[in-house]
Amino acid sequence: MTSTLPGANRMDAPWEELEDRGTGYLSVYFSDPIARWPVRAITRPGDNKSDPNIETGTYGLFSTCEPPMRNRIVKDGAATIFFVTTHKPRAGRSLTGYYKIGWFTEGTQGASNSDYALAASSMRFIKPLPVLEVPAELREICASPFRQMRPTSVQHTSALVELIDQADDRTSDYLQEVERLETFALDQCGYAYPSWGRQSGFSWDEAPAFYKDGDVPRIPNSSRSNSWRCQECNYVVQNRALLKMCPICNHVGSLVPFVGVRP
Image (tube, rainbow, N blue to C red; front, side):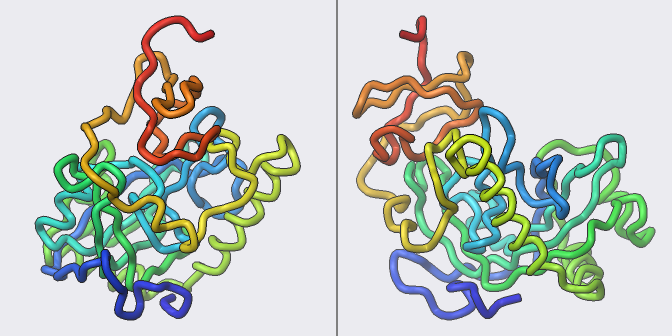
């Protein structure tokens, strides 16, 4: 599916074209337990996920997920991300789809902090394929234990793309499921993304706010207190992972780990 992706065509600055050197990464993500199709964990309490952001075809634009992987994708031309998740309890991991990354730019924290935003030139999502059911030559790399990510060779990358391309394209079902979960969350609590203070989903219209704008210090992705203080409005926000935007004042890059007793 490429027709709705800005990355399917030439993108303007600050986006730069990524050279595809044939390799890729397996990337594990949290999928939403109430989803009909295994989209990201939109309703995860205290940690609403924004990646994989399939509605924009981006990764790392809105979130702080996996900066080491994003950095290596840009540096190594590892242009294919294969998405893996455990959708149903005790069902094991499944392969759900891929991005072909065509473009990159510096994110909020900049290249010096390994913060690159990635944009897909194409993507394809399928009915979840259990990793124990992939062809034998791919089973070891897909099914042997790993945590968040695993690099894939040129040979494995090509074979995985072919495998996914042979399955029915269910990308539209995934996109509809993102909208359904956002609507469900909005009806339940008044926010599509409570952690973000957002009443609507993500779009390309707001992308420029998340590009690098000046030098910023490195900020850790986790806080021991699961709380963050905004350096602009001084509000303390609870969330497991670092958010790129303060949900109160909407200032980008202003949250730092909170140490102390919450007011």
